[in-house]
Length: 119
Image 1: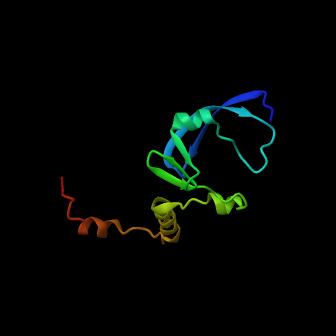
Image 2 (image 1 turned 30 degrees about the vertical axis):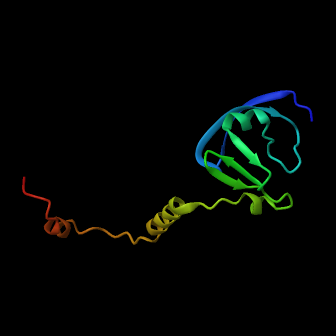
Image 3 (image 1 turned 180 degrees about the horizontal axis):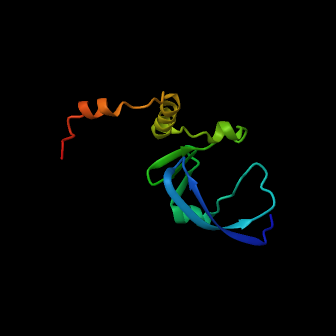
């Protein structure tokens, strides 16, 4: 493999730590086959990522990630569940879209609001 350029890139590894942003100088090449990037020994050591071939696990700060099947499709190998935050956001958007907007009867609202006073 040959490279003749470097780029400072920012990326995450959400399967290990979803809230960690990594910035690193990466070598650029035209093609890596099925891979998006190759992580070298320098960054593995810096991030303290242990590759345990004895049980096929990558470990980093207590998080463990099983090795992926080399024949798996990207969707099978790299699917990450979106979690509760995304579900709540989608639910909120649906409630907003489904809302029925009508003119408010302001006199009725004011009469029934116990926190309002004459001052």
